[in-house]
Length: 603
Picture 1 (cartoon, rainbow, N blue to C red):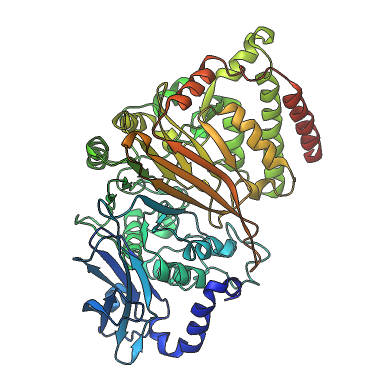
Picture 2: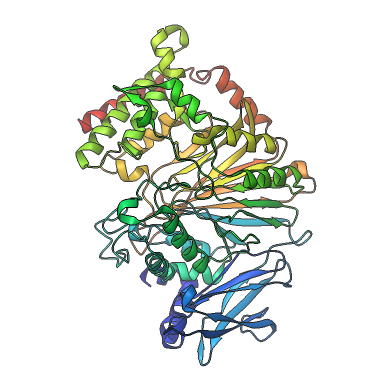
């Protein structure tokens, strides 16, 4: 409990858990609530003393913190077939109401936890969401969860990678992992149903996780690591059918464990079809997607289009822009586009595990980045990473030099280097461009916002359909998962330089941070008219995820209105002339000197 005791508001939770643990030991993973609606919520717990037989668990929900005013009660059965997890799907509750609930069985009782239903029209003029994603147990403490538990958010939206499949001492493992008691269990990569269940139990047994779930309802979706890295409908980067069996079996195992530990309201019989929507009064409609295992085509890889060191640009562009290329299936696409068009809420908000904003940089920078951070061909050893990092920043330094010069001073070859832009991350919507355009076309004229995760770094940007800014995107950093910071931590200052140059190269990306872990607060305010609707995104950075003590700071606060005219004007300016704002070369020149120094340090 070291990471929790430092927060005064958590003292009661810690003391009660410590003193009453024997009584609660049969509910050792605590309780949780998921998928709140305007009149319902899903309550969850796990019976920790299962011995092979079914156990009846009683639940009570109340509007009073001591359960004195019982609103509803009932029972559910914990069975070994579901790893003794239970989900009570409640209806007929009041909107925008804080409820308190508890599970019991005989003399055993869980903690009393709280949840909250969503607002109906007229209940409130403000909705506040907490956005998290990419939560790797062996990478550090989940301080973001602690902060959100003690915040005033109405709901926590989880953008995916709630657990990770990796073995010890794979990705995210550090010199602190063992001392913190955060080695993954089981120790190997998880493949079987028993594996996925055990990994979920480990993550759910984390004290910050239990605290968060005891105080806030969660709306969640999966990304790839709930299955395996860069999962798609036919496999994954780190899935080996020869040694790990059929991909369909692994998907079924992972999905079953997910639903056992992350229950939701789903009206479909197929457990993989988890897309669904939530209405927060007339303030926003939230759409949660499934982008991995139902329809996603295999992510493209530049290396498959390179021969003798040269990219076949025609073949690659034909592939990435193919109209048949899909991240989501036809039924989900129809549901999403129709829902966006028909929504009358102030904001139409799509939660997508991966970035939807276009993130293109000159081809040579995209290739260099993918050598460093991509999948096949990725640098693995320390020397390979050092060489790849040096190559990337050499390319960026040269490109930055080109970008600060007017076109009249550039050669044809230099102009070609500047204007030949490609996606930096083909696992994102950039790798499924035609389908993204279909979604953005449906969002035209709406107050459109996307919430994303996946990259472990923080981003704010525009979503653009052809040359028109359709909406904006808040993309959160990881709670603990390493991002670009892991690669450059041996070279202080390189992360900042990387950010500065990328922001010059990628028009749609307006802000980024690559060195902090944390979360995003998203607050929607309802004005008297829809045209004046506003939303604020606050990117919260943590001073440390390795120490039990930490501080939280605001890295960026971005206030948005429904008026896109200023965004469109700026984007058009960038399209017309990227160099319009580069009247002085003093800043960029200094940047070049710093790059030279940093690259020389790596040589």
